[in-house]
Image (cartoon, rainbow, N blue to C red; front, side, top):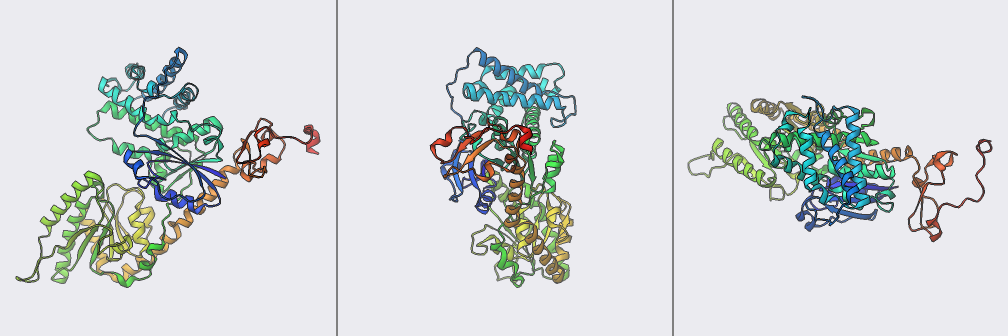
Length: 574
């Protein structure tokens, strides 16, 4: 079958979220054909280029989200009226609902109104040209203002000032840019058997439109819930009116995507709960854990003797949500506990990871200063050089050339986050056969199961006690590490991930009605172009079924030729 893989800021670019997962999925499903529809996030990302693509990728189409030039489209009076109606309805849905009612708890009528407005704008862009100029126009800002000032609008919307309205209008223009793309034709997304959105939000918009225009089924995968990410990204410096209106928009969009998706695959139970809370139908949900390549961790996992018995390891991206400050304070308690037991504590802490952006770099500097204050260099004697028990390193250095080597260097791997989605460093440690101590955030408990210790977040004392309990008991560490490796190999490998999606693809396509007859190079129908129900007399075999020839003979461009006249229904039954 032909899969339209929809991404935003990821695959096939060298840098981006979920890029590695998408590449493993495409390479693991070599029996299928993939068309990639990618939205880029920055000019730098586009300049970095693409990763090497496998032969099953037949086409890549890209579009920037970070910029949109004026398209020069000038609407006539009728088109302007249509835009005003659709955009006005969209704006009114953002201000609908009483106090305390979330945008994902609105009535079905409001959900339909939002969807109709969204698809109305897409139809306008397809028929009369792009929406860039219209979405940036004064008419768009005026529609937002009328919606905010209307009776029954929330108080925060009533208080929106002109700068707030301009900020909301600019954000909506960026998010709605996919509506103006030329992807929605019979030789574009109309030619795929299935759209697979690698994330929610903007990435899934082309899938919504392909479903609206051509009836293409949509599969949504969310390893990190986009709506949750939007809520977390809205900082305190954002005006309340802007936060309220944008939260309403993203809530409505998430609910529409969940409503129209044929299947939704959260990456863990934590994401699944978010999706259900935001309106996803429980019957559509199927948890599929992210797949990781276990190969690089096999040698470490099978060689427990490489463990340093008095070393704790933290691996990941350095940023404030990882709460390394609590980890450093916990390590200070660990040193005091071990000092009481050993006289001279030998316990060390290795923090292995690169900072994430400018904020991460500033946080790393703060943590290094704190470590220097908490642990002044210790020396064995008056003539020896002091040594700080906390080291800050990056993967690729002499002591940690690979992630597996970083995990191998410690007896216990620690995760101290206060916010976490799917904890990849935790799975890496489990594949390495290491015992773990983690904070109870995100999907940590679901991933660890009973193979590690879990403590409350922002609790250095609990974190310290759990680490010391494992440092004292090497036999317990070995048992937990072996159980963790077995669990990771069973649930979190590439093989189980690819097999799960292969089955979901077949399930969705087998339940989808025939939309067209797809011919191969010899002119014969391809299997998934004509599913089994096409053999049964009825509406599936309607002569109006669209014909799409992929490299077939010239005569295949017309409607199918019938050798005989169709039999009456009564004779066909016999």
